[in-house]
Image (cartoon, rainbow, N blue to C red):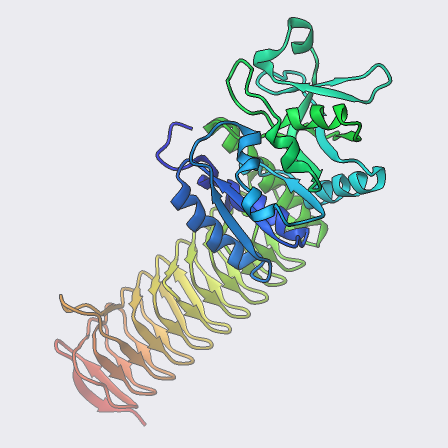
Length: 443
């Protein structure tokens, strides 16, 4: 990968490579999980622990460090202390294969159980199998052995059926078999596929499950393969959402990460980015160029072109944009409108409130039915700390008003255009000027 970041922690489609594998493993509801880490062990351990806590906190996991990386069989051997007393079926997955579906793994486990095999390996056909171990079969089509490419003859390299690196084993006697594996090969490593050959020599059954979708079992070893995997994951997600009643006007240009949720009858326009744990309700319209990250939208919400919504909430029938920016827990309540070139930061707009043009609302709470004129700014920072602005129900803020926090504008008050408000404004009054003073009391 040519990176300081451990390969399995590279992000793709809203999770890390390892996170996608963990997601598939959690879907199987295993009795326990063991993670073998080598390069970047501490970072990988921390990342997995955090991800697993979110996915399956009820399932125990252990982390084992492979301090000497001496091959795949050695990686499994270092788990003996954790698994020696465990019985049942062991599923072995690689942390850099993010496209495996839980359904595929369930099928592998079902075949393994139905055949009574000691081991079952997943395979697929690749037109260009370079770099992969080849599956050599017996004359009757059964499993013979796996040959690593560096040890293969020219004839064996021509085999297109490859080892996908996904195995199921019966734990009974497995570690005895692993102890017999030799590293007498071109790489001087202990190969896990040799365990299958030894099991056959012991008269135990080994099965191969040929998987028809090669792209699902391919690993990620380069930036190009990382990008390709991301495209597949996003395509799957869009297909899943369309099957659930979401319209994508141009699915090919939709960037939708795997944890995004969207309600039926919502329409997503071209070139939209939906990321993180974004949740969108029903009957929404997400227009071209919008980017939503960890956003929460109610029903019938409209996000107009090229708007950014980060870590913020839009209630039913709210409208945002075009070219709006919401961030840091902004909250646009029911029926409120945030217009073009308006930034809302850590602020709440009450029901029916409108801020239509060219304004900055930071660290502010606006009540219901407020109208914010063009060019309004909440001056929330005094050079040392942030202060809040409170605007009560029914206030009309004139264009180019500066609200110098901390300040409160009482219900039904009006500020004149260009007012600089440095003191609290009484309810139902008109204030104008620099600094703003009460001009009259409104009836």
